[in-house]
Each structure stands twice: as C-alpha cells, then as structure tokens.
Length: 225
DNA sequence: GGCCAGGACACCA
DNA sequence: TGGTGTCATGGC
Image (cartoon, rainbow, N blue to C red):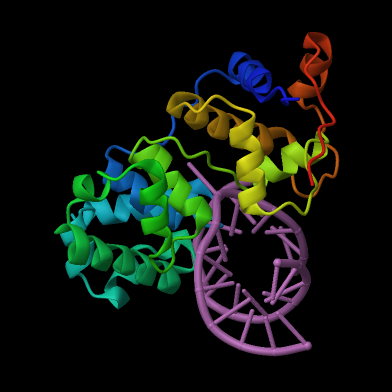
C-alpha cells in the first residue's frame, strides 16, 4: 500500500504556498549554494554568495582560477570555509577536466548518471548531488535531508535511524516521479521543519499537518524497515 | 553561552 | 556497516 505523500504535499502547498526554490539566479549559482549550504543556514550562505558576486567570482572560470586560500576568505560566512573552498575547487576541477568547464555539458546526462558522476567528486555527498540534479539540472531525483527524516519519522512513516538512500527510496516510491513535485515538496518540508519540527523538540508542536492529515484522512503509520 | 543550521569525509572497531 | 570526530560561522 502506498503512503499518501502526495496528499501531504498538497496540504503543505495549500498551507504555505509555493516556496519558489532554489533561491539562485542561475544553475551555476544553485550548484555553489548547494555546496555552501552543507550543514549551514541559508542566511550565512547568502552572504558568501553575495561576496563572490561582488568580487565577480561567481562563474566556473572565477572559482576555477582563484587560489583556494583566497576563495576561503570570501566564503567565510558560510562556515567550514577551508573545507568548502576545497569542495568548490574540486567541483570546478572535475568540470574543466571532463566538460570543458561547461555546466550544460555536465547536465546532458540523465538523472541517474548525473547523480553517479556528481557523487564521484570529492565533497559532493548524496544530498548535495540530489540538490544539484533536481534544482540546477532540473531532473527528477528527490532530495531528502535532516528535516525530511525528522518529519517522516515523527509522523510514524519511517524509523528515525533510516539511512539517506532508504529514506530517498521510500519518498520516491510514494510520489509521482515529477520534477515540479520533487522540487516543491522538499522545499515545503524544509519550511515545515524550520517552523514546527525543531531538533530540540521531540514532538512537532503546532504542526499544521497533524490536524489536516486527520481531517483529510491521510494514511499514516507506514513504518518501513 | 549553548544550541542549531537545507553535510561530507576520515578514521576506527 | 555503523559510530564518532572534525570542519566553523552566525542567528537566536
């Protein structure tokens, strides 16, 4: 039996409206943001991206040419700046070595192949890879994150200790394979998580899903192993 | 002052 | 394969 994730999506969309993700002017900016936002709040990332823009470094050649140490200084506000500077450089190295520095060429592969290729780059893990595939390349790979895990486990859908890949599989199995829905649902879950499912609060207080799910008869308690 | 935020990797048992 | 330490700034 399918878990009714699409109904959850619809309830959240009705409650919060379209989230208009990813906040970035170009696919390249989305890629940079996906790396910089690793374990970091978006407000800190915005400042770093703003610095890169101001210095006219927000381009493949800009990041590729600049020294890692200097790059780190520009992205300080995003935290883990030395590690993230290396990650950005590793991505550009791959882009220039394999695709002549052209993002469009990298994005020519289908979703699965692109995901595998991104995962081969140092510093790109499963969530960052999925974010790039979905939000920059606009291909259907569902993104799960700490909020997805927290919300779905508190709703009783999955175990709290579920792995990234298993949570992703669970989500994709219970949703239509559609870029627009994947895009919006992930963003909505982050919105819900930020407002109602804090890490420090074991119960999602004030969660609009609780009442709405009950009223609309959304199926719950689909624990998967 | 402590906790947390749109993770990933290295190392170890 | 799973657990733990490390990377670090900024908002609340």
